[in-house]
View (spheres, rainbow, N blue to C red):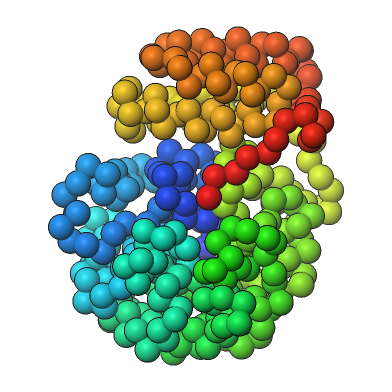
Length: 342
């Protein structure tokens, strides 16, 4: 797929997720079949450029191109400065966050709160595009502020006029947060209204759903967020299904363990042992979600004080599930609740 001047492996995108899409996760998803992975958002507040968290978020060492960095903020000039800063530090695509529904973001009139002020949207987009004229700029939005104000088609036209190269749309409004189900009719209207690539996002958790959303909206690609947590192989599953119409067999237990261990090794190296141990807990929870006996395993996992003990517990847990050549067997849905992070 041609996207913002780059040739991608396919039209499958990893959604930017705060606290999730760090460099180890982005690299893993790309290895597992994603065409592009967008970083978790980086603040436009220049006072935070020197923080350890911001430095980690801006760390793209060894990451496969193209490197897409998402910035968030409400002041056009600060957003322009953030774009230049990130381009100077390796960003090859700048993505603007106007889709995050979190209160701490919207309370400072950033993220999806910006959809209430279309004039400000235009000023921010103009400022960022002009600040990095040689770097493609993309935009992530929601369908609107609330269900009575689904103004995504107008925002999309503003974006196209400003020089935005592609648009991703989550099929919920700001007021919806992550409640209810995503709707795709508004996304289809946007796709018909603009000439730039449009990527559909929201509740795409299976290969069949990806096909359905692409057919319904006419979009150029799909963006996967929460469904990839603990299941990075979803990208190769969707890629295979879109190409062949056939579903892949579930991964072997041995492969799941190998993927998880490699992911954890990158987390420990990226964050350091102490912070990496804590960050790893949520990923281990996602990888084991829905598996027989995982509830008690996760509870015990959260009390383990060292990397060695964490890894040992994982080995022992998967040893109870796998036999030679056997694939993962999930517990019945009503036996193990499915929990998703926002």
